[in-house]
Length: 411
Image (cartoon, rainbow, N blue to C red):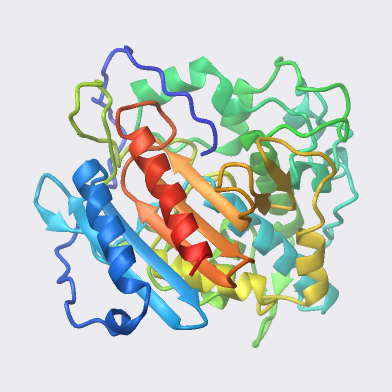
């Protein structure tokens, strides 16, 4: 998730009656006879990954597609406790890259709706407001919600308070880290909180609540919907069901949208220096609102690369929907331009570089999925260390990300 401000110094309460779904990482042989070896980027990327594992990142998997082909590699550990190397088959939690999938899935829904393959008694319209789709009691007490359009949710122009800015949210996750919280339960952290600006459209403010509310809108659209695809019409009552169909359409094989789908069998453990003493604590089991639109996607680096290529190539829906998705909101925030679930990032990279896609940060993992227009390359990676909280490893990760972007963009 974006902009997680981890609270250090809380009571450590891992005991919980809720089931922990996380198991030790699978032992997967790491191939030394890879077709990537002949790619011009293989040696510099491998050197970069090995360097930053030595500097403190537990494990790194990278996948790059460019005019020279596909280059993919991994380094470090999927499971520090059991000394199991990270492979390209290991999935990692991708945080806010879930929003990129939500944006793409929404465009796919609109495309299928326009083609008559998705039939709903409550069709989706980006210009309609939340009050058109959601019961009044769901959005009661949420500033800016009633008159906010679906489009304003998707490009962060709603102004609605970010639920993960609420200290009580952190405390509740700490006290019951295994708990799977639904969207309506999570909205209690938003009610009564002042919006970031007076009216939707008055500004841009990144908020995880936006995609949470989008997930509720999609659930309402899909609750009486049927989809035909290449076969007979079937029911798709929730956005989680539709996400499964969308991910299959994108050809993802080692990824899952948890808890709507079971966790991938080949899952890397996720770590963070929670005690700020240069140690690694396994926080894989901490559930920070998974499955509510802003978080919950677990993916491999190759799956993310396959997805961003298909997305940017308009292979998942007609070009007009990609154009709609990349209709950047006016103004800038954090050196980014906001589209509908997709960003044009530029300020954090070396001068002149641009990246189209989304980054993801969570308590115990980081990931990026970007198209780099200067070089025509598609870059994705996963790292099983948390980037939302401050620790001695965070600047190491930021240095790694910047060096990686620069290397691939200039190749």
